[in-house]
Image 1 (cartoon, rainbow, N blue to C red):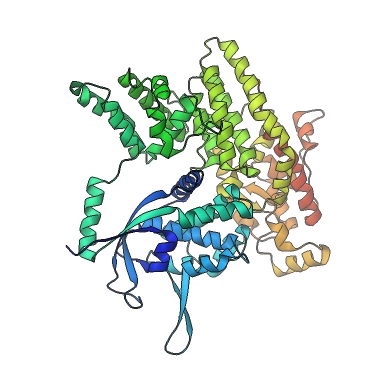
Image 2 (cartoon, rainbow, N blue to C red):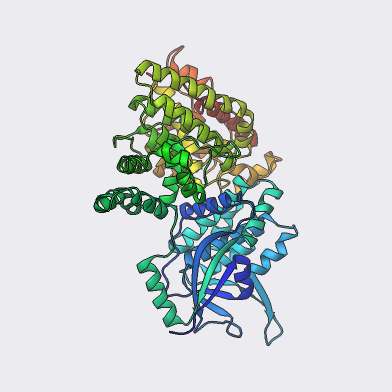
Length: 614
């Protein structure tokens, strides 16, 4: 085996020292927004550790045997390519945040360098070249993209980038990273602090040798595993509490914890962190009751916490409790309740949170022992609360502080045995913890929805917003009080009433009759509705007058009402609903503004807590 070199690098050190290539024999880029967000969450949590280094793993490389490397400075990434590619996308997103700021040149130098070729031409060379299908040109585009989030989708389409395989996932991850940075580090000083931490304190170990030796090391690492995390340390701690004769029994029970998490591709440390916060009161110096992943083992070894968890005196009971929480955790991820039964509320909630937002699992685990009807009601109110969090761009840290405090109260409520007393306590909890916060932020939500543009948030959340509005109107139209599944509405197409790509005559007419910019109105909330796919295809880029007949045949009343309000008797649920809607004879900037405001008023009715539990 050739000599092995090891280096402790930050991403800055690595990209300054060499050029990297993802060789074409490697698997495709498979990370999604979920994995990228988890990586950013971990780095963000380590930011609070007062300048301490944070280790993110190993990168295994070998000198390239082919390619355009200059003077042998190009390295093939043998293991760690998913993480390396994601870090590169983080730098692309940070460069865009720091446009015209002192940090921009430094970030650009990490993404690419330039040299003069033999013809005297300046050639740009990326410091990471991926060989994923359709990916190299895409990443080169993203590293130089200066537009807004809402412009990104259109720009990608204009450039003709294919949206499948690695390219689709790279687009998804870049958008998720951009949203994460905007959401959690909205101020220039905040994102500068994050960049400083990433550039100086987030480290990995780079292992370098020749290609044949590198592949052998790769095989060994993946066969045997390296390092101990808090989950491994907790397992060892539990083995220290039992007699050798019980080792086999404990090993089997521990598998009831780890195997289901692995099979469902859930991160064990993330679960363990939520388990601790949901089941025990966290005493922290800052009083916020939040525990980081790197603090979990220390928390368990604290004497008072050991007594609280009971693992030293009843280790098998403790493991059974953890396993029960694993079952609940996985059920919640699948939209099922703590008993494994179907849950309309959890299914609907997943449409808002996607797979990236998971902090609310602390509350779900804390409230799992509520009566089933009370639990279902709690989940519906969590959905309303999280809607405010998502659309007003509250920081993830602030959300965790709130939820940790809520978990302590919720555990006590779930322990109340009397049915009516539990219901009363839950109602008070919802009013104080959720409704008070939401009422205080109504003006923020109004402003956020006025500023909303399709493309400014992940598309599944835009679809959720329109689906919930549409479902609410249909319920009011039919006089139905109980919400059903949101799924049928999530399957509808997002229709631009004012077409995205207008015909020349329509665009000319708009400019004659509207002082406002066409492009600034086409993605506003008031210009969007949901329509069945066949109708959406037919509607295409037609003028409003041509679309109205199609809208009247839609299966949902919110879309039908654009063209025609129904008349059903007097003083009916429909007449009451019509007072909040409006039909339009023409479609211009004023119409879009008017419909935006009426949808905002509907939103404030919908995303509101309701403390009466039947």
